[in-house]
Length: 259
Image 1 (cartoon, rainbow, N blue to C red):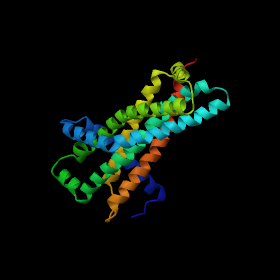
Image 2: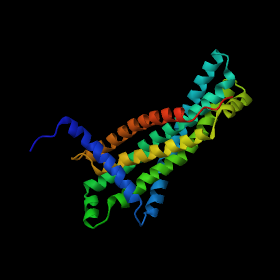
Image 3: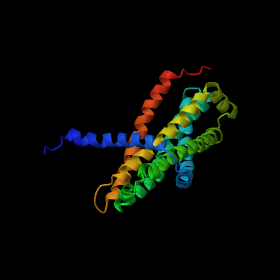
Image 4: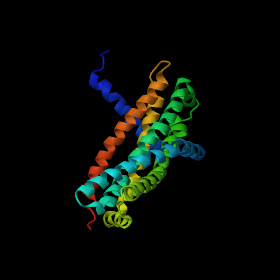
């Protein structure tokens, strides 16, 4: 039997990942749907991610507002700070921060749970009994991470905008009216929509990555721990790559709103 080439070994996990993605979509349409599991997992992911997301967004939004406030002041355009700061928070900072915290807190917990079940052969036992572990365990957890990311993105947006307003208006002495008017003059409803869609997609991707690594942990006593670390790192990389693609598409497809 021939030894697989390095390219084959590298692409095999990618194929399995997309296969799991497709299987999750297929099993998600089967009945009965695990509503109770979905509610429990949504509450759990929200509980471990909500406070860190809010606390992490405050300095993130403040840093953006302070930096833009200083730059616009140097160019004599301080009245446009609100537009730049709020759009940066809404379109980029809030969904990315939400995704990172969901991946780090919720995703690691999901991966550890599924990994422990796999090591204890609970997943194999469910398959022997004719119960689909994808439908019973994975689908509710992936959807829970997507829903939680959608909700927490709204929280992160509000907290980030409030933090940016405080630091720009109170700390830097900016004009409250100019801060709000400049944002309302350039912002669009599509900015909020794409932010929410990003957050939901990031949550789904993080959930699939966590499930994939949890269902396929490396062998040995350290297998679950290594799987959790790999899941978090892979999720972070995918979040930034997907964000780059979505941002480029949004800027190309949605015309900017003029003053």
